[in-house]
Amino acid sequence: MATPVRIGLVGLGQRGLQHLRALWQIEEAEVAALCDPFEENLDEGKIKGFVDDFSMGDIRTGTSFEALMETDGLDAVYFSIPPNVHNGELVAAARAGLHIFAEKPVSLYLDEAAEMDAAIREAGVFATVGFNQRHDRWHEAIHHFLADKRLVMATSVSFGALEGHSVKHTRTEELGGPKNRVWAANAAWSGTTVVEAGIHRLDLMRYYAGDVAWVRADYVHRDADDIVDGGDNPYAYSVTFGFECGLILNLLLGRLRRTFYGDGYDDIAWDRGHLKVEGDGPVAYYYEGPYPPDPRPTTDDLRHPLDVEARGDSTFNINRDFVDALVHGDPAHLRNTFSSSMNSHAAVIGANISDQLGGRKIALDELMSSDEFAPYRRKPAG
Image (cartoon, rainbow, N blue to C red; front, side):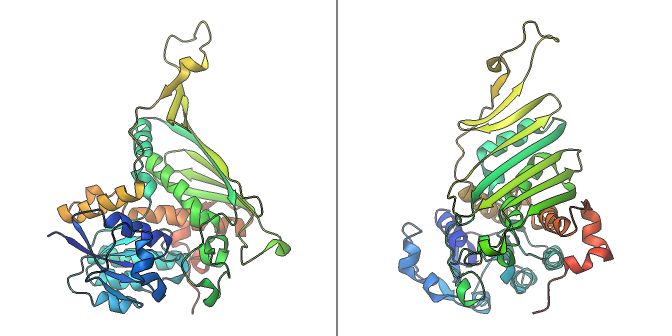
C-alpha cells in the first residue's frame, strides 16, 4: 500500500485518543478523519491536551459515521466505541474495502460479532482487535519462553475498585447509561467485568497457550442496595477456562465499591516449573541439575529471570504493527486478526452464560453453533 496510510478514527474517548496519539507519531500514517457523536470530543483544543503537537489541519471531522465514510482516499478505520453501541458501522467499513482496527470487546453479542467477522472475511481486508498486551515486550518474552512447554495451570487474580476506571467521554447520562459516565462498571454497557476487562487477561493467555475449548463460571452478584450511578457489575468472578492444549486457567476478578485499591498477580505452571510476573520482569522457577537433588535447592537456585527488553508502549507498538501490516501488505505483522480473536470473545461471553446457567460447563463450539444457545447469541431488537 502506498504511504501515508490514510486512517479515520471512530470514537475520540479515552482509548480513541490513545490511538490518535500513537498514530500521530508514525510517519507512514496520516490521520485523515475523526468521528465522534459529541462535538466537544472533536475540539482541537481538547485533543491537544492528549496528543502532543496535534493540529487539526485538513482532517475531516464529523459527528456521524456516514460523514467519515465520505472522506476521500481512506484506507483504514479505527473503532474505539463502547461495545453496546455498534450499529453496523464495522460491517459497512469492511464492505467498503477498508482495513479495520477494532477495540475490544467488539460487541456484547456473538451473532453481531460473527456478522462482523463474516463481512471482513468476504471483503478480504486486514482486521485486528486491540489486544495491545500481546505487544508488550515482557509478554512477548513469556510467549517465546513457554512455546515448548507443556502448560498445565495458570491463575490470574485482579482486584480493583468499581469506580476505578477512568471517566469516559461518552455522554452515557443522555443515552440511558450511568450518570457518572463510568460505563465499565455497568453490565448493560460493559457486558460485565469479565467481558470488558477480563478479556485482556484471557487473550494474553491465548497468546501463550492457544485457543479455549470450554468455560465455566460463578459470579457473586451485587446487592441491589449497593448500586450507585449504574455501577451494577458483580462483586466477584470465578471463571475457569479450559484450553485445547490441556491448560486450565483460573481467572479471579473483583470489583469492590468504596475501596479505591487494587492489586493482583499472575502465575503460569508447566509440568516442570512456574512462571511469575514480578516487579522487575517475568521470572521462571525451575530446577536444573541431577535428580533427586542433594542438597535441596534454594529459591535462588531455582530463580531464572527471563532476558527481557524494556516493556515499551504497547499501544504504540500495536499501532506500529497494524500500520506496517498495511504498508507491506503482510498480515504477519498482526499478532491477532479479527477472526482469531473471536475465540477470546466467545470465551468471555460464554462465562456470562455459564453463570446464568448455574455454573454450567460450556463448550465454545456448541456455544457458537447450537440452537440451544441461539437466544444467548442474538442481539435484542432495538
